[in-house]
Image 1: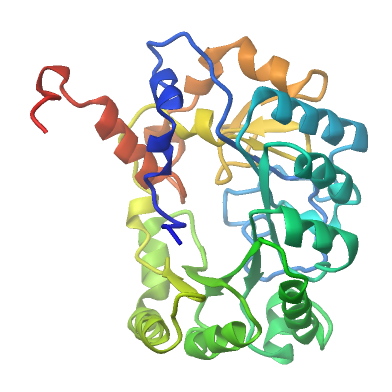
Image 2 (image 1 turned 30 degrees about the vertical axis):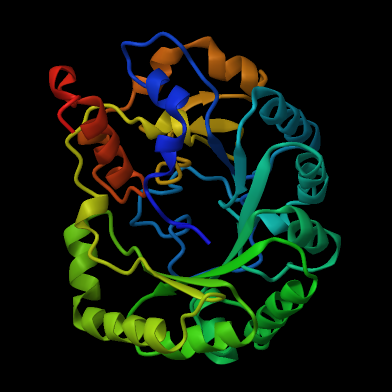
Length: 356
């Protein structure tokens, strides 16, 4: 298997790269779209960035919002006809709480558009699980607790929910199909000593991949680093141990647990990834990225409430340069390192390109 988490994927889309600059008039379709079909969730995670008041993500989110059935089906038609390459369903809420998810992915399953989803795993069963198992590219379950009691503490759910979610994942693997089942293990001070133990449990039920990531507790990179500092070394040691003793050709451990400065500070003045990977919220607004979703003041780039997405996307390229990351995005940004790489690509001196 090739590299799943490489930042170099966009360089396989030369036409897209050539269209990104403000100096180019051409608008091409996004490579990928992240769709948040509902803000309803069956869990209430204590650290959820969409529900934590001191974090900018989700600050204008209405928890009751969801995309109407007619609109999601229209949107599926648009992404298929626009030749969008992939769709990821995410939150807001849990996509598997969305009543029309099955209808939407049935359309995608019969098209060229690849699809995937993030989920808490509580509703990973029935027909929608069958469709994902056999037609989706990947599915990633978010986890934190290591047993029923700790899981209830993290997520505000009844006892036994951890066991139920683990059982759902194990049964999902037994459905067969091509879907790559991963877990993101979100680390804070309470589970920091349980990393190796949790990874081993997940391997035992047949998960293909575990991504270890830090819990975001602040809009400041320094404050996040200071929070994780007391247990940072111990977590890294457990990840290394897991890679050595548990990793193999059928089970990957991806270490995304690192200091967060590189995801906060930005010196560039426009964001290439707005055109590569935009976000459509359950409120039918289009946002610049997943880190600014439901931010109406500096994340909103348009609305599709009264127009088709295809009409909106190709109508005005200037909207893609409305946000200046150096002043408006001094918070966590999953695309920051990718944008830095693209800016270096764009700024290469054309007179010296041949001197490779």
